Image (tube, rainbow, N blue to C red):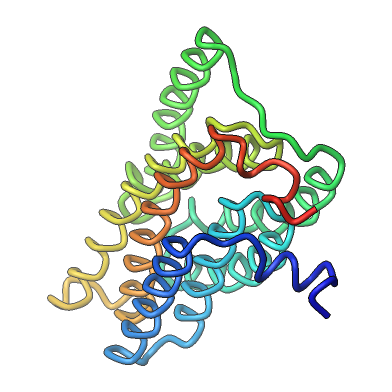
Length: 236
């Protein structure tokens, strides 16, 4: 059993630090659900989202299995929250999971842009964010300036992630920071009675998830730059 692909993907080549922080991140998700148990879907999205990005940090294909579950759950959360940018992106995420599985199976090494190309990438992402903000404002979505980051910056980050470019994590850090603010504001609005859209449990689970993903994105930047994520994260 220890020689199977699934066992190697799940359990081999982990550092004690990584095991500790992954366990803490999952416990945070379960704690949020225990405190506000009104959204099982939100909790599932949080746990599988954490696992997806952690295994992605390790450069392992199994990340896309957890990612599919998380994206399906998150699509529902985004819809009931009227977070139309997130909803549109979650549909893209669902579609991108099998594509990522295929791409990572054919190219095991991570890549990096030249400094000039990296600058153009970040400028382009900023311009795309402004355009997305304008479109989502026309659709009367909630907090379009934050939701646009989900709508366009996440799209660019996911493409880079699928293609195994290290710069994807820099964009995810921006996305995670914006999402912490986004879901925190929605949580406060529900608690104060300013809105009855969505549920507090779903919102808080997303706050916890984005905080977990922010930490993971920062750590993944180091891991991918070191080459540790190449070749299925050392499982081959």
